[in-house]
Length: 313
Image (tube, helix red, strand yellow):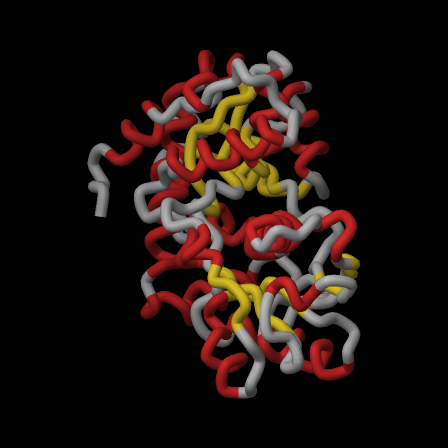
């Protein structure tokens, strides 16, 4: 059987975004499917979309869904074929003197990067409290990883007065006396399709078998990552790969289960309800036309075929 070579890329620079295909390659999941997979990073979601449309890469493993929806609405042949981050297990934590979200008026809210998920989630929480993210708070980017060890000192020093962090550290913040101002899983009980696996229409038409095989390998990697007993082996795979910890990463976040692993789907599929939430937000913000619908971008038949033979558990 001749191997099919695939050009696969992540848009985000965070190491976590490339772990699943790295695991799938190291464990032989792709090789068993007759695939050779080259894994790279474009640097941004917009670059990923452009590279996908221009046939410079075959599959994006972490495309931000608003970027994908906007592109599809413009008529670009981009389709979502599998899930990556199907929800966001996060909390909004405040400095010890802050007692409510409204108490943040005029205060500084930390972000990891200027336009990342923390900005999206913080803005959602502020709006629900009747505040205007663009005027009522000051966003401060590059405030470190979303862990207790990284964020607590910044809250204590007054650099920021609130920050979205991983929910895995909720008990640490509570014990130390920091108020949990919001739980994002309570705000979003149906999930929130932050990022997804995407490809372009022409590639899908010509490479159905390779796409299904790729998704089958990714599903097996997701399940491997989600099983706690595999954590030491996963870390060994990361250390033996060309992946590098980003400079602002709190590496202790990898000592046990990485906090975002619960958000990856064991069935590899899309959270349709969570995607609809984002589409509705984009329409309200007038970044997407009212005519756009999720069924214009979803191609879930490929992941459903990939599940055949490996089950849905």
